[in-house]
Length: 164
Image (cartoon, rainbow, N blue to C red; front, side):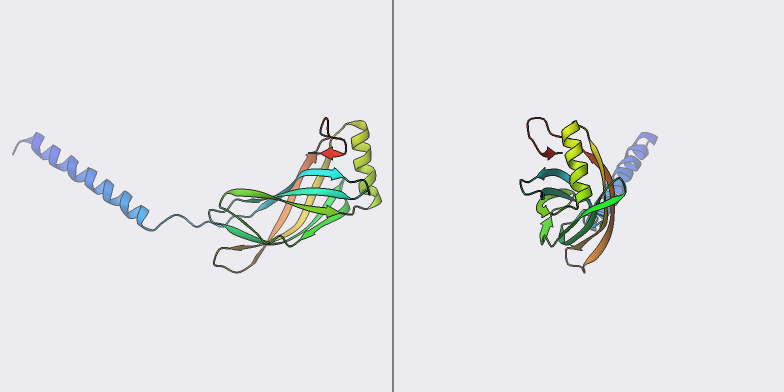
């Protein structure tokens, strides 16, 4: 047998081994990774009675669906708490996806003043969310995830009383 024939036979064997290794790696199925979720305010709307309608975006960064059972977050402006965002959404969010829940919040006077000032001046306001979210990875027990998020809301042109 010539050198070329040995080389061809050896390269076929190498390709076959690589293919088998790749197939074996796939046999275990997709990776089931549970990552910490996140939450942020997507929109805050000031209601006529002074309460706020808050659209809270819950983000599932896991590779599997998660059922979100509880949200308990303190909303703060400039380091001072102004409202609690508390709900039991009972919401399942698919892998690496997000969904929005709406809740009505009764802010304290300091929070009302911060938002009124931001809307009147047409400027952004920074906020933070601190607390926990209770979520259940599929076929698993409920886990509480600590949440700490800092972001900003800006007045939305053409929509009075709305910040995004």
